[in-house]
Amino acid sequence: TDASMYQVLPIGVVIPRNTADARRALEIAREHGAPALPRGGGTSQAGQTLGRSLVIDSSKYLTEICALDTDARTASVEPGIVLDELNRVLAPSGLFFPVDVSTSSRATIGGMAANNSVGSRSLRYGHMVDNVLGIDAVLADGERLHFDANAFNGTTNGRLKALADRMTGLYEREREEFARRLPQTARNVAGFNLDRLGREDRNLADILVGSEGTLAWFERVDLKLATIPQHKVLGICHFPTFLSAMESAQHLVKLEPTVIELVDSTVINLARQQAQFRSTLERFVRGTPEALFFIEFAGDDRDELLRQLDGLEEVMGTLGFPDAVVRAEEREAQQSVWNVRKAALNIVMSAKGDGKPVSFIEDCAVPLPKLGEYTERLTDVFTRHGTTGTW
Image (cartoon, rainbow, N blue to C red):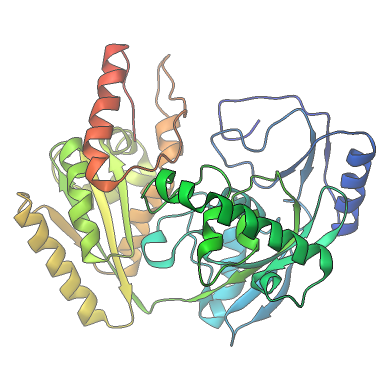
């Protein structure tokens, strides 16, 4: 099992101590015609790490940082290293890996690459595919190749060039279909990233990112790092209805924040019943809002960030919500607020009674102007079936 509601009995489980072990496991699976399934932290809620297959789990031993170049702001890591551990090692150098998923204490870099994870700071830093420079991969036939941007310059080995040419040909063949069919949203993790081969900065590793372990085993992942901002400020925006929050998102992103994250009334009410979160909510939540947005601005000029926070208050007033922003300007206060958001799933799962929440729609991608309509119609579906949903 994983963090989803699914359970599948695997053919077997391999916990490799090194990359040679993983390659041998793949070889045995190939000899017997058995599917192989890479696994990291098992934090996905849609069953991506489950299947009647040979599960190869990188999270116990394949956790090394293989190379770190602080000047170039790059790192090469094994797939099983956990995001928080990577950032702990990077912190003294003033760098971090900015794809900030809520499960950062257990999500592995290999799993994040396989899922094309996004995280709360994607407004500033993009998605996993924007931050993976290259991947050392083992293909289904056992060949080891390095996927990166150089695959298209004609100087790589013959197999890699052939793959690059085939993928380019496939993109060119379907170019018009991509333009017609792909949703115009910031995030889209449906299918492979073939559309990115039309970019000037195309990278063959983009095809592997988001492939859910279907194309290759990742031995190493080369990452683009970012400089840790010197300052952050946070505004906690209060909304009287969930719909009003959803309709406001399209306007608030224009302020170019680093983060906009949602906490709904279910999380708020359950968190108030837990001692470790009660004091934070008493300090930063006014009244009984149906939804909160945590909106962060980050950078090296604190005065500019405070002006951006002022601008947030002005826009909220323009939207009809005056005095609806609680400011958290100090790091300690901000961390206590983010602790509530990171624990949101666990908080929801703590609900007492016979009814338990089941995660069954994960990471939906909706154009912001449609967000209010989408969530309202889905709430109506819940109501018709005598149940409720949390977000």
